[in-house]
Amino acid sequence: MLKEFNITVLGQARVGKTSLLSSIYYEFDQVISNDIDLEIRAVNEEDSLLGKPVIDMQKAFDTSTKMPLNNADVVPATRLGRKNGVTDIKYKFTLGQKNKKPKIQLVFRDYPGEQLLENQHEVVKRIRECDVTMIAVDTLSLMTDEGKFDPLLLHRNTNSNDKGNNGSVGVLRIFQDAYKDLKSDKLILLVPTKCEKWTGDEASATLLLDRLKLKYEPLLRFLNSDGPRDRVAVVVTPVETLGNIVYAYMSSKESYSPNFLKKSVFSKYAPKNCDQPLRYILRFTLKRFLENQGFWFDLFGWDKPFLNAINEFTKGCKTETSLEENSNGFAVLQGEQLL
Image 1: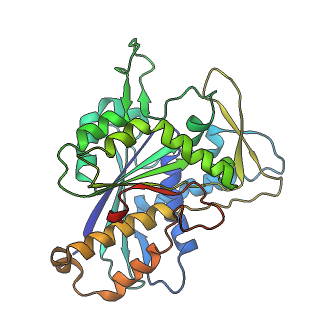
Image 2: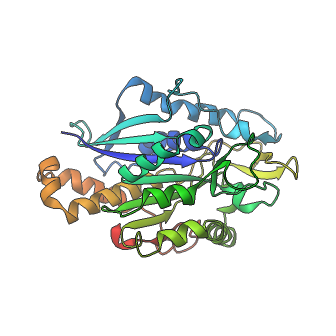
């Protein structure tokens, strides 16, 4: 019997949610040690197509010059699994020991930013049901003034005449509704994307983390209030889906129009830290087992090799205290006792 874990993925349109999921899937085999007996498999052919955006991202390095690249070049458009009337895209993967029957099924539910406005009630319901919510954070919205983009807004209805927030979908409002009277523990991953410019040195990474805390302060304040505080873990895990392409400038000071440059003409596709969200998801999952073995025993039995393999993999979680030289913006903001 497979235990299913649902992970909701939220973020603004073209923030790079699908690129993030694709990188997590693609990079798993790249970072897993030969000594760790784990493997991840796509459930069906459509799920396996999640690896295709990686090919698109690799194409950004095909040029032999350092010509500027725009947002569409570094964040491939989502074309996978979307059908008329479908509000989210589900990607299913199984996790187990190598060459053995899997024990866990991970279901990533990707909500396109453009559809959030019309489906807020469903999103709230999914977040309430899900063990983990992953929020893809547009780093450029945090770090540049030219973007004039509120990172707490997942989507704004540009056709709305409202002057306030009636034409937008806000992260805070969604979680206030979803986390009323919480009965189970939750994990929220704040995952900065397009962050390569700010993760190379300690000062820049610290600035990124500080700016995220500032911009997300209303949400973080709510999550640290009396209701959710003891039930919700919040972790910041910056992910470099490209590695060697960095933000350069905005084409316009009046609109969100980022341009990027390769670090050198010889730069190659080199994603970094794409494994970290999955490591934290499994670390959170393992803790639930250790706290409620009676329930989990029916699922896993005394399969110590499998549990030990998960434990070994989760030891690679990065935090600001586990990295001696550069935190790279990683931090557990609250709920360390849940991890």
